[in-house]
Image (cartoon, rainbow, N blue to C red; front, top):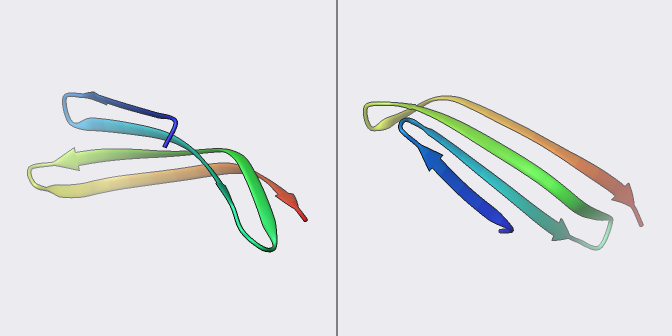
Length: 50
């Protein structure tokens, strides 16, 4: 995890990852919470094949 930001019911995570088949230098997840449940979740990444 590179960054975690929370503001009210919204959480944002920036991250990086690597596996045997791909390198992901930048990925993001955004969570929109309603009560104690995730109402919406978005994910995006920049992926490079190895």
